Image (cartoon, rainbow, N blue to C red; front, side, top):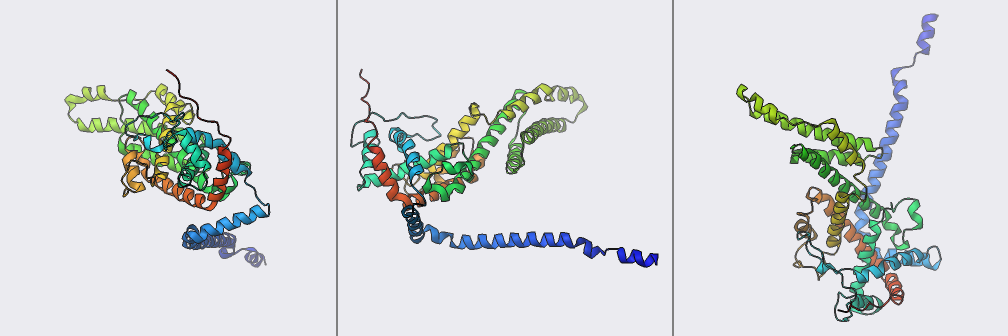
Length: 387
């Protein structure tokens, strides 16, 4: 009886794994369903980017306006915050190549109405709704305003951002957020690599290209994880520094095999002290501080690259008409220290360019009327300083 009771109480191995099996099957089916939906969306996405898709989006927005489901209040506030600085800003074509490292001054105060880069011309153009110059500067103004929005330290697809996101950009919030995330990653990783090189160079240790690429890859992977903490970045950077030191010493030992050279090898051995490693850890801690000069420099450079890329079809740019966005990026990126992120920046530029183009076409009439009303409140250009 005892034997038969034990046999009845035993659970077969198959029954034991059933819960795990069903969990796996449900997870796999959910993933398959998501993948199927994504494939279908990718197949029809082009249809929503053509004239019919633009018309559909415009009609749906107009319907919401008429039913008072939405307004243009936040859109007006957003454009109002940008229009003055746009009219005062340095024109794109007068900005030198990033390779030159220079900068050009603004043109505020130029009262020549025939000068397309003057404050007065831009102001007049944005206010002249039915003119060709209005269409051109309206497009440039929307590009400028969206890039200014991208620079703000806000996750545009978060619940907190709902009270700030312009009504005309709600459908683009995830794209803005993804682009900003990528910008932050690129700038931070670039800063960390430079800081690592600086500490190593003080000890006459070289972080070679292979080691730099490995460090970049590991930092990218770590930053992609939602559970990443500061200590994870510190560990990666410290380990990379130690490995660079160790590899350099090993290479030196291998290149000098004779016993008579042992003393020379020992004299040329490099090391990183605890003080060096503590200093580097502190640099990693403060790497993303906006006051960090290296972080600020890379931030400025990547936004300048993106601004050039989204304006690559601008006839005023100093490029031949047959140059593509990719060619322009390759021309501009070489002196920025960002060339190892070339593919990521190119994809961002393409995404932003397409997003801005479609958004401008969908909401052109609203942007136009808002600009015309805002221009009326802009001050006249100040008189140039007298000698």
